[in-house]
Amino acid sequence: MMAVGLAMAAVFGFGITGWYDRKGLHRIPVETTPAKTAATA
Image (cartoon, rainbow, N blue to C red):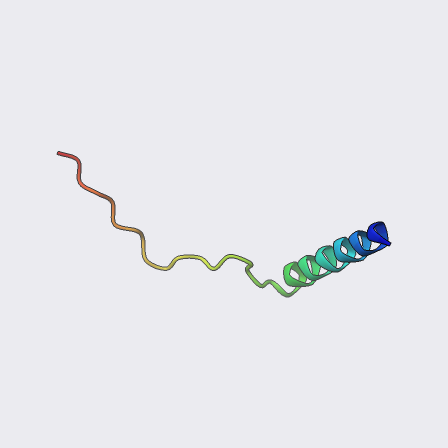
C-alpha cells in the first residue's frame, strides 16, 4: 500500500507540474526589483 500511495503522489505531482507549465504559470515568482547589494569598504 505504501508503494501505491507513493506512485499516486508522484503521478499527481508531475501532473500538476505539467499543467502549470502548459498554462505558462510560474512556480517561483520573478522578483521585479533587484536586491540591494552591500557596499564593500
